[in-house]
Length: 434
Image (cartoon, rainbow, N blue to C red; front, top):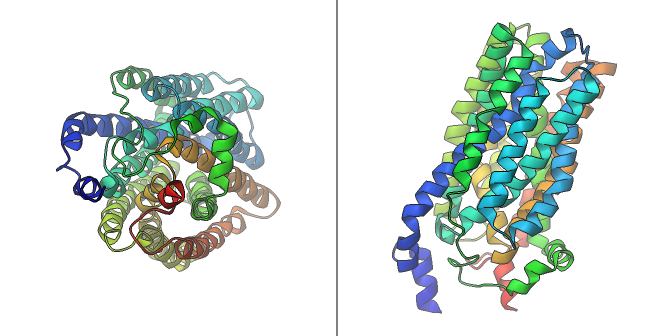
């Protein structure tokens, strides 16, 4: 066992790892590219809020906020179903179904004739994305050994800022030149080609690159599977902090284009482009730096991933507050860049933590339960709550919820780090061995 564990930690020295690396690189590239379009389709609507308000649909801020909330409710509720399927069925086929589903729903959003039809189309996007987001990290964790997963997750989730930024840029440009309907169609159609790529991916045996494996029969008992996850204290604390983090990031991502236009009086095209550029740069740098730093520090303690996330998130709080409350353009730019950079440092470490502290045959379920929780408690309510405050007060007041949520996430992750043993062995694996 000691020799096996040593080889696993060394990654490429294990002959099984060498056999996987060729297909692993391809799988990482394909899944990351799909994740990029996942977030492009998700956030294209946020660039269209002002146009939807002025269009024949005449959306209010509350209705506009509910478009994201409706999508995320479906996304979160359907996620546990795909989590169970992802731990017991072909993962590439399920991912292909999800990509095709969300792409068609995004394109159909461009045909909406009233608020209800647009709401239903955006909600349907959640079905497809639930399949992909819950299963993608699980599939990747069986292509790469434990010691490389912080970096792998950093690369995979680097598609979040890039895809979100492309959603702002593509949606904004299409809206300005061709209208909001065209923006939805252009964002949705390419995903159908990506769905075909998924079918060519290999589905490695679950847990083949881990020191410990769990009884595969648990994957056929979804209720017992999810109950065991709820009893995993480090996992539940990590997800609680992730929910507060998602509340902040989701509210910020959805309302920033409208905030810049309405409060800062930035022209529509410049608002989406400038925020998109900030997200791309800070997302790339922050996500990659966090992933590599997490893997390096995890050589010394399993708590490293959460300590890095907690410290970076708490450091982001004052910058986020100043960016949203000080009117000076230079102050906004510097503080928003700093806040986003520090926030994205957590992406790789947090997602590596989730797959490492649960059993190999629970990873899709763990991602699914996490998705359900972080969205139901996070970015499901945040766009709507900010919209409600904006409707009854002002958008300037509504966005102040963001730095408060960032503070809460950092504090919770401190408790999460303290809940884990300081050694290298993951708590979930210790529990499995016991």
